[in-house]
Amino acid sequence: MSPLNLDESLLDDHLNSPRFIPLRFASRRRRFFIAAGSAFSILSFLLLAYISFSRPSLLVSQEVPPHTDDAPSWNRKSSLLGPPADRFRDNLRNDTKYMTSWISAGWTNDVMTYGNLIYLAMLTERVPIVGPFTPSHIGGDAGNILFSEVFDLDYLSKRIGISVLEWSEVKNISSTEIEDIGCWSVWEAVQTREKHPRKSDALRLQGLDISFTAGPASLQKIPGYEHDPHAHFWSIASLLYSPDRENNLVAPQPSEVHGAVLPPDEHLACFDYLYYVCAHTSFEYEHDISPAWRFVVKNFRWTNRLQGIADGYLRRTFKVPDHDPIPPYIAIHARRANDFIRYCNGQPKEDCFPSITTYQRRIEEMQTETRDRLGVVPQHVIMLSDEEDPAWWDSIRMVGWYTIDHVGEDTVNKYGSKWYPVLIDAVIQSSGIGLIGMESSTMSLLAGRRVQDWHNGVFKNVKWGRPNADDH
Ligand SMILES: Nc1nc2c(ncn2[C@@H]2O[C@H](COP(=O)(O)OP(=O)(O)OP(=O)(O)O)[C@@H](O)[C@H]2O)c(=O)[nH]1
Ligand SMILES: *[C@@H]1O[C@H](CO)[C@@H](O)[C@H](O)[C@H]1NC(C)=O
Ligand SMILES: *[C@@H]1O[C@H](CO)[C@@H](O)[C@H](O)[C@H]1NC(C)=O
Image (cartoon, rainbow, N blue to C red; front, side, top):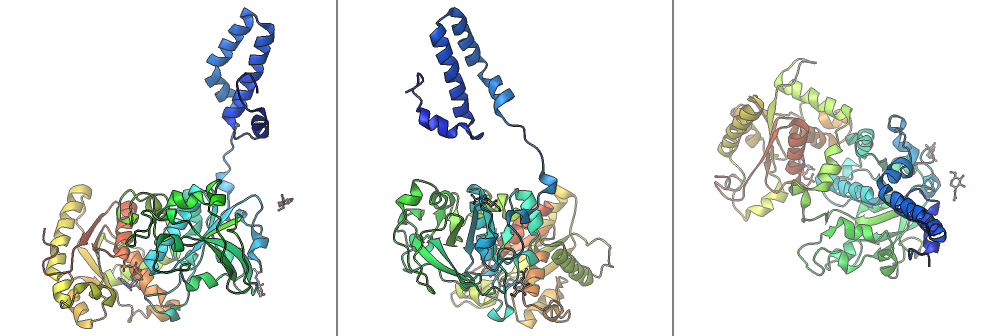
């Protein structure tokens, strides 16, 4: 033992690492202490006092290594060894750790899930790898669409200061290699209904043969509570560090193709499903505190191409010449398809969903707010909805609100994908000065947050479910 009761072996292990500033300082101080002790003079005590008092300046002038600002030349693809490889392992750097997970719900939920993955990767200093978006509500024949066709990955990476990669950059999409890997199953830990990892077609997209290890029941926010499958970001993160990792390494389940039995991979950490994750409150994107929104998804900006396409639709709809500014507008997002009718308990749609009068009141309130706060009174109102009844759309145009004509514009054929009507509508919902959304729609929620944070605009949800539900 040294005079300061510090374990020398521990100290020496860390001496060469510039990251352990407090220990380096301790060892320096210790050397002076020994020198002082052997001389045993007043002078050495004065020296010791001097050293102690000058601790802050020592730290500032000598211990903090100079840093260089190399941000302008930073390229997110430098987090890979090269172009897409046949095997993902051949493309990962040995000085970098990675993280991935998969999606398994509607598009907006999937955007949130990728947001959670990227936030978890930030917390654990890993490079997140996202997959494409897979179709659900819009029909399986829509095919997948790359994350980077929707959101600007370079912008995102620069804004959040870490590389965000997508799988097609890591592994050649045409590769036939099936690679074994061990992953954690969060899903098995947070619910009891299904005794298997979260199922998803997305799991098969990268040619991975996954051996899952069930996460501990303690991952669930309220362990055993069947009505809330949320886990906390840090509970999941703890599985990547000692001692929680080794304490929770139960027997891995054999993979489907090779029957491989592997513990969770440490180079590429992977989790089956990260939708139900929060820092503090379940369904946290609904709360302003949402760190996944504030630190990540806020920086999911539409690609310039997609924004440009949507701007073209807006100009044609509002009859604004090319290159002229698009007038400030209020967008309404009305969810009216069967998945929302289910919550109407048999009431007719016109009793259950917001009426035109309800929307008119919200529009007036919004105009008052934007006039008072921004000095702008938007006159253009545009309706976006999954409604398929032409009579309802006619009633919308009758009151003078604009609608997008995806049939007349031949949107699906023009862009070769059924994704484009949804994407264009989502961009339009998030590019106005106001959004009137539909309570409990996540698509409304994300569009509303974009309007608030990107355009300093106003976001209000209408209540629905019975006549006059939105009265206030
Ligand atoms: N074109 C278009 N499609 C919409 C609109 N609103 C909803 N949809 C469709 O319905 C889906 C909405 O839900 P998802 O994005 O799957 O996400 P979700 O989490 O199920 O969304 P919510 O049920 O709204 O919470 C969209 O992806 C579209 O396929 C709209 O305004 N325009
Ligand atoms: C890491 O990879 C580099 C080349 O990419 C190689 O030179 C180095 O030896 C590798 N280090 C280890 C520990 O494998
Ligand atoms: C991906 O694989 C295909 C088929 O093997 C090949 O033709 C193509 O060049 C590969 N792409 C890259 C970037 O290696």
